[in-house]
Image 1 (cartoon, rainbow, N blue to C red):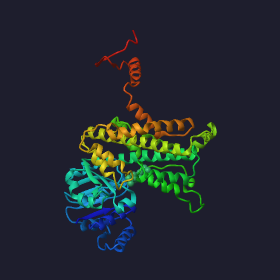
Image 2: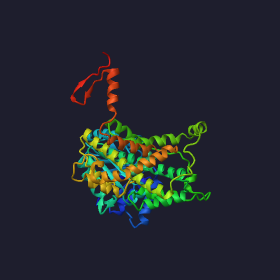
Image 3: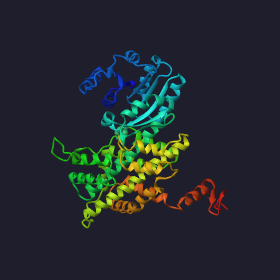
Image 4: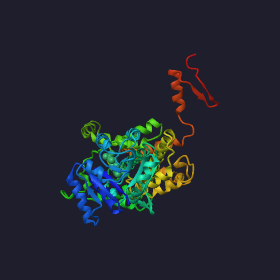
Amino acid sequence: MAHLGLIGIGVMGGAFALNLAENGHDVSLLDRSAEKMAEAVQEAKDEGLSGRLIACADAEAFVKSLPKPRSILVLVPSGGPLDSVIKMLKPQLDKGDLIADLGNSNYTDTERRVAELEDTGLLFLGMGISGGAEGARHGPSIMAGGSKASWARVKGPLQDSAAKFEEEPCCDWFGPGGAGHFIKMLHNGIEYADMQLIAEAYGLMSNGLGMSATEIGAVYKDWNNGPLNSYLIEIAAEVSLATDPKTGSAMLDIILDKAGQKGTGRWSVIEALHLGAPASMMAAAVEARNISADIETRLQMEAAFGPSPKPIPKDMAPKKKALGALEQAMLAAKVCAYAQGFEVLSRASDSFNWNLDLAAIARVWRAGCIIRSVFLDEISDVFDGSDEKHLMLSPVFQDYMNVNAPALQAVSSFGIINGHALPAMTAALNYHNMRRTGRSTANMIQGLRDYFGAHTFERIDDPDVKVNGPWHD
Ligand code: 6PG
């Protein structure tokens, strides 16, 4: 059994310390708040884990309490706070000691920290951890990156405390440097797209079909028994069915429509653009959150142009049929979101020489994390032991699209005609349409580029030679 250090005993840190303790490991705790550490120690006591959590008065006592070589997990906000912790620890540690960052750090910062610390003989791991406080307590999904030797030092206790899918720990090492944090960032990008699709479906049911929050909750519940089964659909049902204790109204009707974000969705889109990989659904989700945040301008525009969507049409299709189509549209769009996500991962793997195991990534997302679903088991099967290039080209996902893409088209058309904003759904549809267009319209782009800038183009009858067009004779 291991004895680890853990810095940052907030909600997540406290929960993770208890999880490690429950799995038989000793954990030295360090936090600016003695109260939070005392709470964690008390909780451990209450749960029959006395002595496993050790609150330390300061950094010196903390470092001294750990057996050498030391392994220290850090769960503090990424950026400045993490750098401060590293700066504080560095002079007190010995060569071979390990710091592991479990926050949502930008992978480029992780690359920098790995290089800087390894230069001084210390080890550094960048690990994404998903699942919120509940996951941290009872089993998160963990995506690690850094040197393999560093990983070997903490693999045991982390896999013990990670979520399990059919007894397999959802916790793995994926590559050097920032690979783990890159994968966690993309997990969040997909999470953004998934959540935006759920919100768009909610908008179609509420404003398009005139359904109440309770009726909508029942639909999500029903979907959770079918191919859309996932943690996010499950909690969409719970959020829709909740009642505001203050007013007795549906909680959803009381929540201000202004979405927050901390950056991982935006980073995913930026990185995808750098890599030349498609991420239109994540981009749509980030943009929807950005626009939602500016309520004042939305209200001014509503006054200037009239409200959108249009009032519900009288000749609307029967609800049941519409809901069936919506479920199918969601499934097709979800396939597109994951296809894009895995395209980004595959491009990153090639560009950074990470040799990422896409099947293993899908495997650690099957339980514990926010995007967990059975669907990910199917994705891992596609990539397992095969050199399948694109999710949608696998027979299973090809079939998903052939069966469900017509509904995505129908639902998107209904939504657009009636003024619904469906940025993620239509991005999915456009992505699918673009990906299956054998002869695209990029010949026009090439003609224009060559006309104004002599950028050259290739001819379809001689693609190996770059030529100019007859524009300026
Ligand atoms: C998780 C979550 C978690 C958090 C993100 C996204 O995997 O447990 O992704 O990391 O929800 O920070 O938060 P925002 O929506 O605020 O960007």
